[in-house]
Length: 166
Length: 166
DNA sequence: TATTGTTATACTCTATAACTATA
DNA sequence: TATAGTTATAGAGTATAACAATA
Image (cartoon, rainbow over all chains, first blue to last red; front, side, top):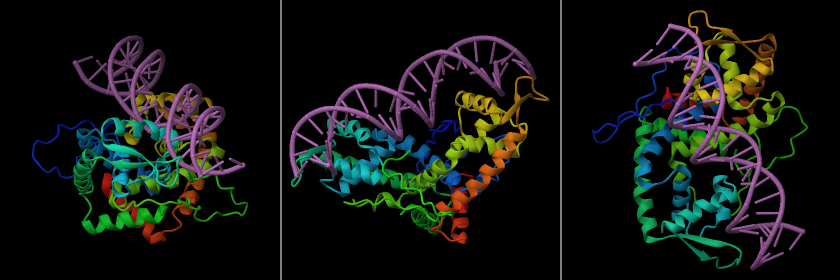
């Protein structure tokens, strides 16, 4: 992950608002970098990643784990190939992830109906329960991490980001 | 970097417009992931990163290299500590980067005027020339990578991203 | 005692080549 | 011949601990 961003003593008060930003003393002039979409997109992603890691550790899920599980939840029978293609993961790097989810009893691997080479991935009941909870937590965490934006601004932000890659 | 996104035979025609997006056949339903700022920010960043890597290889600069060099250019005498703090890099991971830039003759390390422990970083004339060219290339590459957005939309996008982390 | 820069090192993430079994 | 899944492995990125020199 990133550097600084100290592990702030997590507030014991319930619903956390926007997380505190790192105090950078001796600030440098970053005006040129701040004109770049790439730089800013990464900084914003880093913010979300931080909060994601903190709150999703409870589920034992990293971002890619969550993406895979959520994708299987809404695409029962999806194959590794489809997951790789959708998430820009290389097949060798998905193998151990899938194996872990399997051994955790979150997913099931069934023979593919039409293609003997492929394996259809399905959530187990335990997996479905976990994804339901995890998705709620992610929605909340995203809301908190983007609390500086109005709902309208957040929609606009997502729309413009998608215009970049979709 | 990412997976797919084949190395498209780079167009020999001059100014490239928006790069082609990967054709994902057998598409999965990604609607839930697409409601998330984190997911979308990363996808957009991946797009820029791809174009960045392609065009900046000519200068032998990765994103972090460029950030450091550009930062030194606009903050002569900046210290490693300041760069680490600004870019969220851990000190041990900056050492070899700085050493490489030094051995390439792009930067100079001068004793810090007020602090005997610190080292002030400055661009050499060669470094300044490279940064000037590199910054122009980055601006162009960013324009191309965000060509699906109007200039107004691009401004809005950057403003909202900064609202997330600044 | 705290901080800057550094070394050494470990861990994670990403990438490539090659194999197998099916198509 | 091509594709899905896998193995092994290499390389890049990120992390922690500990040290010397200076404050």
